[in-house]
Image (cartoon, rainbow, N blue to C red; front, side, top):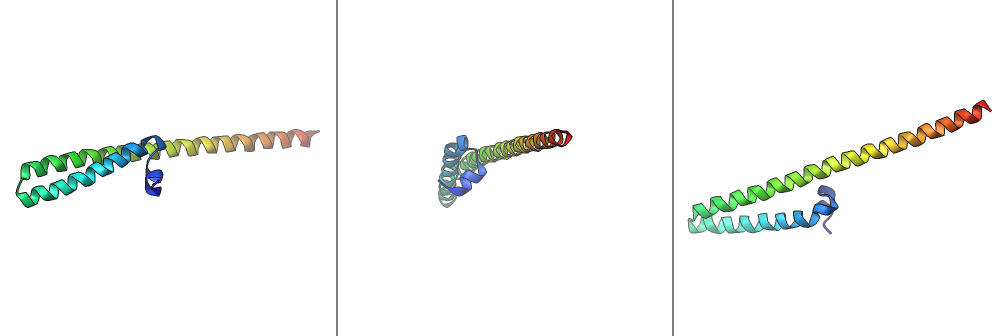
Length: 96
């Protein structure tokens, strides 16, 4: 699996992200053909669709970023809980 996809998207979004990327690449190739053919209406439609796909990718990236931030916060809270528990245990033994 592509390392960049793993870094940028949640595991549940990777297949959808791959499809969006393929779609964008195909649309850009077709848009290039539209320019060569002078078919500017088609060019506009393809670029609009590519833009929609890019926005969807950006949305999925943002969701991954938020998910990662929440996971990091949970891990920090769990670690802080372990530190607090160790401190309480140490303080309890010290008092004995």
